[in-house]
Image 1 (cartoon, rainbow, N blue to C red):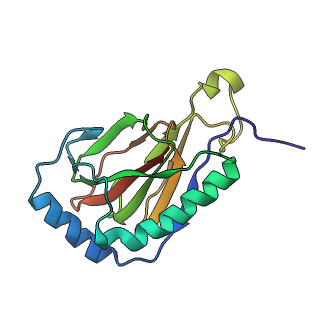
Image 2 (tube, rainbow, N blue to C red):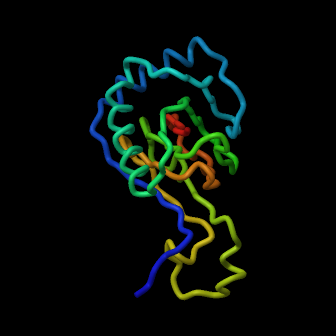
Length: 185
């Protein structure tokens, strides 16, 4: 029997929320905020929010349920709670450098407006699997050093906060809008 040990995980959920209302709320927040620099290169990164805005309560209700399911699967004893969230708007040419979320346990991204060719998200292995396995016939989730996802509207990805990730440049003239968040102890 083949077993995958010491693995990371990605939890993928497709939601059905009205992203146009969310987009309008985020654009209003952006119009009143200069934002900050974090992993973003050329895009807008909002300030972090520690309390959930009423416009996003239903979304976070569903995310909370998924986080608790992950907690059970990982058999984590400590209570995991919401920490913070923020918005990213990547305009043409903008991207996010490789980073991780050191003060959290479970992190995620929710995609609100995703034009075609606006950049995939990639997750990196902690070790150099190419040195370990040498050449392989086909790359998969067990033997790849990097694993990518094509984002789409209403998709929510949750992953361990230690998993390093980055976002390709937006090659579309339309803005790519997402919301990132953290849960921890």
